[in-house]
Length: 534
Ligand code: NA7
Image (tube, rainbow, N blue to C red):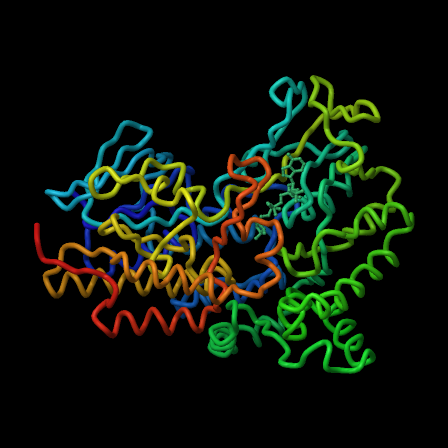
């Protein structure tokens, strides 16, 4: 019998295991992969890398880790991040408390005993007092519903389930379906060596230059000396990044001033163009059009063929209303003779055949098909587990009309279950590790509080859950992202409920969220019912 079972050994699970072990609790992590890393373990596709500044992404909790680990690039590639996860796991012997290669199938709450009963795919059955889910917000890959996909004779991989073995790209005919943040990273990498690359694009996205570069020795020294300031800054910004909105309004300044900021941000590294832009561009359609027009012109300048350029310019949503894919010479890829863009709106995929992909224009022969088709975001990894609370209440059923939670951490009807980076949690709309640390510290504190005070059961009240859910929707009111199809709204065309938008993130900002969580803790976990029974 465990005190705490932590499901998942990515960035949140690893830190949670570390913290609970420090309290002297019987804690065990369970991970489907064969090692630590979560997102960085699974997403090994070519070109995968940070869009967050590397030094703003790592853990802040250990001065030793900060001193000993050196990031090589401002936006590190996936193999380096996976090495980082391994470095942290080695340093704190985290693997001693993790069972690998085992997937949680079912978690049922036992009312009398006040335990969770966990069933794993290796037939193991385990009881635990607390269930902490650290399953990740973008970890349930979604395959496209395409006739004949299983008949394809070449190699096919979803980016989120990329094999550990090297996948040959050079000299092959490669197809990529999907042009989200992942697709863009894959395309610009694969285009370098593929004999031929066909990009199957349904909806273009507004992409912006990442401006990555190596970290020099002098910068390394400067970064290591500035970690306190870096994390202080991240904690003060809305989404935990080193970027925060410009208080000016796009429509309140002159056209010249507006263009000057846009040019500056387009030339700067990272998410600045999305997050440090004028304060009204993500809420006011007219303001949004100014930045959309600016980026559209950049695309036209960078893509030689005007017809291809027009296909790459989004027409159905404004800049920044979906996650902005960050790119390195992405648009220039379409000037290469070995790259072809297929617009699925005018020529939809009819079927995947043994030889390739068929559209009304004919069959595109392929050796390798890459599916960058996204995830069942934020709730998908929880939905894929049979989670049942009091009296057999199914979590998936409870959330049939969209998630309802308290702080994105607790759910009424599901005692002693805490959901790190869960739906309606600020961590879902954040430079994730910054918010993960807050989530984990909060969960650790509540478990410590309960242990010290003899409490054995915690459950969000329905009233608190209703109030929080209303608040989640209130703070998102007016944001253009709520009017746009994206994973933030729980939309992926391959899901059953693909036509029912449901906001999955907390967009009120991490400082406000943190304050609220602290307030709740200071009030003896107001909005949660704590009891000493069984
Ligand atoms: P996204 O952002 O959900 O993008 C998925 C892409 O796949 C998107 O371009 C979709 O087009 C496309 N897609 C999905 N299904 C199909 C089918 N059936 N046919 C054609 N095209 C399809 O996922 P990502 O992995 O890129 O990014 C997710 C997050 O991970 C990202 O925001 C980062 O935070 C990390 P659509 O837009 O639906 O027309």
